[in-house]
Length: 449
Image 1 (tube, rainbow, N blue to C red):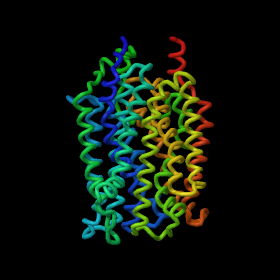
Image 2: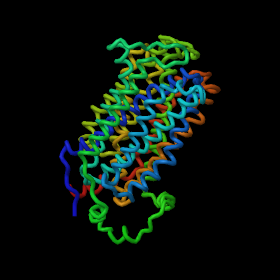
Image 3: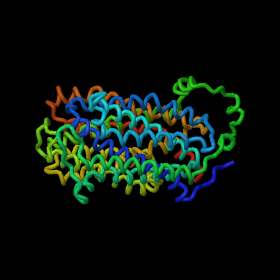
Image 4: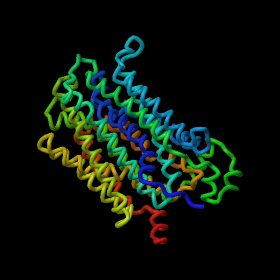
């Protein structure tokens, strides 16, 4: 029994919720650091506030993956989880920039950091069941297309989220100035719009996408007996971790260095560009000039996400011609050079060229590892293994969060631009590690052809 091939628009609707998720994620990535600085965080403390987010992902992801494998409701197998994650993430988007409302109970900085934790944990709850849904519903020869469509929607959502504060301030004239300790109105409204779009896009996927039943998935692999005999226990996560497929182990190093670099970029881009490119003092995070720099970083993040959405259209064809591994390795090298070039840029406009390289790498990071991984995972454990795979995304972020701030303070003389250079070098290391990965799906597809 084979899975039905889906049309492009069926795949599009199945992944459409990712547009809203990534819009919210982009608002967080581009603006959380400056919001925390508005509430009183120093630049070398930023990575510490971000550490809670990947820590929650480390715990939440495999549990969500496990239960999404075992759960079947009227909404299906994966859909209840990303709907719940979207609702919680929307709450975080609404409350983070309004953290100063809670100063009667806690310092606004603590509340802001807490909302960052809730948002990131909720995005994690929503994201991985989406990855598993694509692997569940698509045959192996459509998976690269499926993850590429996800990347396209991720790019579109991220462009909207990244550019929204700039558009609100410069196109609609909404103020980007505020009193010290207060978040500007254009950011408040951007986060509210992000929450609304997030819920709406998730609902579209929930109501337009069907899932295979557990019995149908079992039939695809002829493993109904295994499915019945396996005892259901949350502790299986630990045994599954020990038994993870070879391809996943090989991808772990690639993911580690890719996401170590991404985390450094997200945390330190705003202060690095404000200081290195705009020439602003590191202590300045409330002036109009700093807000303009922060808005421009949002535009730049939108550029790399727009490039990723465009490049994602070509990923299936490039991968078919030269293989998924080489596609991913070349993309990572281009992204690494893009990050390093930020140090050399003569002004803020030149940074657009840097973002083109980063966007190519981002498209590949969002698609190629999952397309390679999906062929090595049994369907009945797709959710839990996608959750376990998240270990290799959150662990590098946790490590970077712990050491990033002190390294900037004591080794880089307080200058965060060097954190972006290290992020670029990290991408290049990831590209080198791609060579040892075994792509099971590529082997099968080439054999059939």
